[in-house]
Structure formats: C-alpha cells, structure tokens
Image (cartoon, rainbow, N blue to C red; front, side):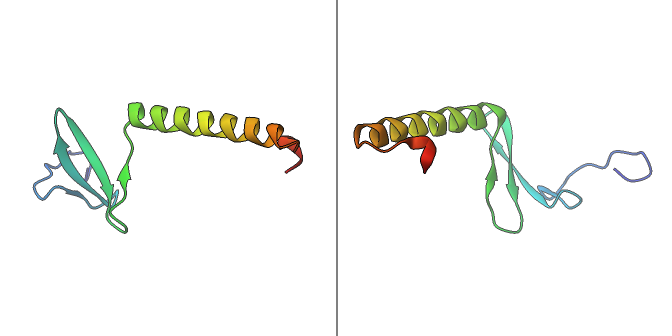
Length: 73
C-alpha cells in the first residue's frame, strides 16, 4: 500500500513483507524470500504445536521410566 492506496500484486511477491505468495488450493501460502521457508497457516501451526506437545509428553514419560526427573534436565 502506497499513499493509502492498495496496489495489485502482479509478480507473486510482497516486497514490503519480503514474502513470495503462491495459491495452494483455496488459500494463499506465504514463503520467506530470504530462505524460502513456508509460513504456516493457523491450522498448520496449531497442528505443529499439538504434535510438539505430544512429543514432549512422550519424552517426559520415557525419562521418568528411566528414573530421570524430567524437570531436572
């Protein structure tokens, strides 16, 4: 947006945000231009967080089974 006017994106890039945009199904996916990493959509981020928390719980249980207090490491 320049001077309070929206400008059409014609090259699949947002220069101010330094993002590349791609249509994926019905959504727009955003990729960082500096490393091509995809920014997760809210639903993808929620799923990744859930998986990470589940993995942490599994590791805590395993440490406990080995006689190690998970809170001490």
